[in-house]
Amino acid sequence: MPEDKSEDCRRMAGNCRKKKEKYMSEVKGYIHSTESFGSVDGPGVRFIIFVSGCPMRCQFCHNPDTWKMQDGELKTTDELLKTALRYKSYWKDKGGITVSGGEPLMQMDFLIDLFKKAKEQGVHTNIDTSGAVFTKEEPFFGKLQELLKYTDMLMLDIKHIDDEQHKILTGQSNKNILEFARYLSDIKKPIWIRHVLVPERSDKDEYLERLHDFIETLDNVERVEVLPYHTLGAYKWKELGYDYKLEGIDPPTQERIENANRILETAKYLK
Image 1 (cartoon, rainbow, N blue to C red):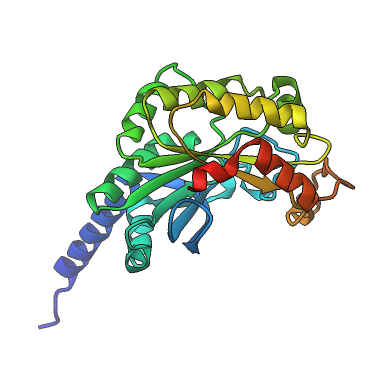
Image 2: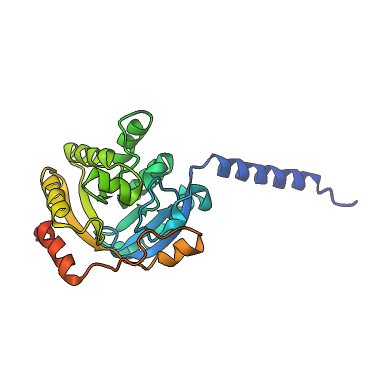
C-alpha cells in the first residue's frame, strides 16, 4: 500500500503554525546593529544593542541612520539575549548589556522584557539615553518605573545646559531631560553623565560652568565624561541626503577638552 503522508503533513503544518504564533507573540524591538565587545559604553566589557528611532536631530549626530525606527530590523528579546550571553564569560564582574541608539526609551516594552530576562540571568544592565522622551504622564511613566526595576544604571547624555541653545543644537527643549536627571537623582538610580563638546555650540565656559552647577545638585552621579565632537559620521548625512549643520566646524582642541574636563571636574569621579 502507498504510504499515507497526510498525518505527517498536518503535524508539520501544525508545528509551523505554532512557531509562527510564538514568534508573533514575542516582544520585539527595531534594532540598528549590535557590538560584541564594547569598552566605552558602561563599566567593563559590554554587549551593545543599538536601537533605531530617535526624536532628536542633533547637529553632531554620527548615526543619522538610526533616526527612523522602521529602518531597523525587528528582533525578539530572546534572540538578542541569546546572542549576548555567548559573550558572558568576557564580562567578568563589571560587564553586561548596554542598550543605546537611537533612543532606547522610545521602545519601552522591548526594554522591559529584555532587561527582566537579562536580570534573571544575572546580567548587569545599562541604558544610554538622551532622556528626550521623558514625561511623568501615563503610560510612559508607569512603564519607566517598571523598567528601572531591572536597570542597574543609565548613561544620560546632556547635550546642552542652555534651553535655547539646546533647541538649536538638537531641535528640542532640554527641560524634560533635566527633569529626568532630577528624577533619577531622587530615586538614587546611578548615572553617568555624558556631554559632547562642540565648538561654536556647547564649548563655552559659561555653559560648562552652568552644567557643572547643575550636576552638583544631583546625588546619583558616578561619572562625568566629556566626549569631543568629531566628524566621522558626516559622510552618512550626505549619503542620506541631509544638510550637515556643522560643516566647517573642526573638533575641539586638546586645550579645550582639558578645559571642559577641568570645569566639569571629571577627574574627581575617577578616584
